Image 1 (cartoon, rainbow, N blue to C red):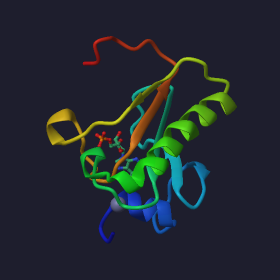
Image 2 (cartoon, rainbow, N blue to C red):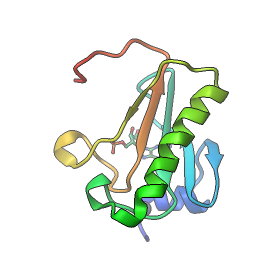
Image 3 (cartoon, rainbow, N blue to C red):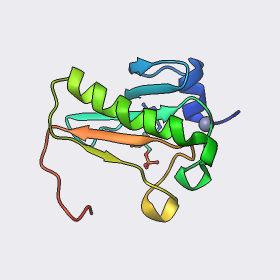
Length: 112
Ligand code: 5GP
Ligand code: ZN
């Protein structure tokens, strides 16, 4: 989708510090990290938010979670938080589905 920063990153039109990429998924470092490790994992396909995902995206959503676990393992990270903000009121600022993979500090629960 035009004018979508994460579509542009997934297609290589915009630079990012890539951690992982395949035909379905891209993972890259967050520009404004909120933890020592802060990686964004996105579908290459433009899905605005989790609310906009469809049945046909089930495999893709599962693959994103497995990719998060794989990236964490490769980085030697045992404890991490995987977060998807859904909707502006919940803190979503980029309207292309993304999961925050965060690690390297203590996290509060319930989440703030
Ligand atoms: P949200 O607030 O939507 O859950 O998370 C969006 C995240 O994207 C934020 O943590 C923000 O720092 C990150 N971000 C926004 N624009 C860019 C960008 O152009 N490149 C990268 N690498 N991260 C971005
Ligand atoms: Zn997009």
